[in-house]
Image (cartoon, rainbow, N blue to C red; front, side, top):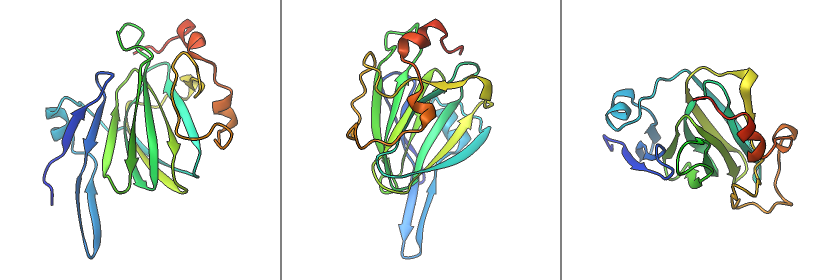
Length: 188
């Protein structure tokens, strides 16, 4: 069994792709997604507050989600299926404001993405029954839970799903663009 994680910094700064500890044999597999002390030693101070799971059909696009007040940091892992995971830097004071990056997370690659406070998060499901585990640091604030429309041209995310085939929630389709966000930005 691999006894350690591999942490690779992403741009915008503060985000990481994490190769999880994984082993498999004829019985099945074992994967460790979080070890608080090892994460802290690698620059990720993570205190688990809540976990939840989403299951998505192929072509579902979720996001871009965040909380305006007391935003959560997230550790996102795919338990089954495959997603194209997107993070957007919403820290208005930095040089990477509005910059985004995406990584593929899958059951096969055993990776997680660390989404720091100050970022928006979303993903596109690339397979049916894509099951995503979210581990969150910080208390969920339902009153300020919001988002930015997935196709805002000022951010310019290139989604790997045809726009006509994409499946969205009504809530996500009702999100405003980055210009509205700038009138009431996230308070980190």
